Length: 341
Image (cartoon, rainbow, N blue to C red; front, side, top):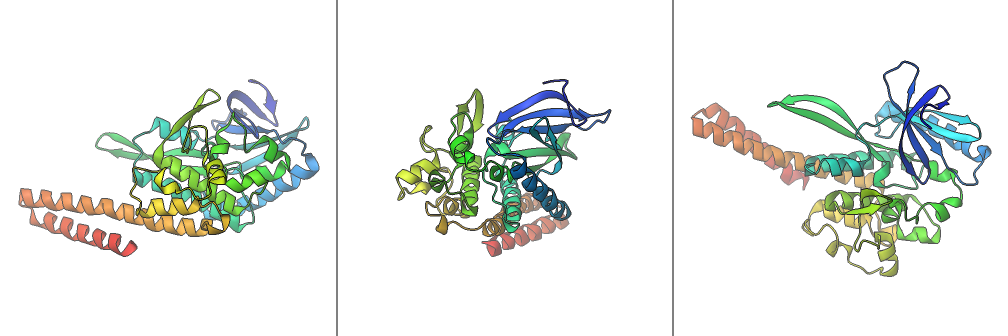
């Protein structure tokens, strides 16, 4: 496929394959930008079913661009030789699963930031009447931006871009047969229990989002189709949704995120998202609000420790103005932690 031209884009290499199609890196003309071209595989869906959805996504993305929602922007879509292609910007850090495997040092503060961004995107989609229909760690893409130097170390600012939204609707009924329970993709590990009954709703998206968050904390891995993936599971061959479908009364808080205290606010939120009954799951909007509060508390707690360190340094060196700055800063940050809880 390398060297093939599609709509003015020259394909340079294959990036990966998924249920909905194959993704290629491509260049346009003499430009420096790299694009990602996804050749869609949509089963029996024809142009009359696909094109209206693609046009709708283009319209919604204008609102997303104006409000800086972290979804992957569709540059354009192409229809060539009976194939549909989605053109997006290339995300240089790969999928969220790949990123966390390459950066095991990713701390709780960055993890919660990623969760906030994911929930922000899902909240936006739901508010516009779009059910993602296939959230998993492979369609959470990461971009990096240079943030400067600190003590000789390069600082990068990372952002999640949620992709593949709306594609599920283009596949019609084929999606239940050919997507959610395939063994050569990690998707089944993020799928809600009700999907086995061929039901997929906004609440199903919330379950998948909760499964992503649990996987981000546990970092459990499996080898799927010659690729190491971070996926959530209780037993390697039993995804959450399947386990809850067969054992609805399973206390999932006891078998996942074991290193996190049961009363931890983040764990409590994630467990609620993984409720067997869709009616008991929170909305994406509520999840986003809670994560903002948790993120603020996490950042404030880091500020508490920084304030203590500054105060101690000021006391040891006899520089009392610095001691007062650290003490007052730490006290203010501690107040923010208490009030956010």
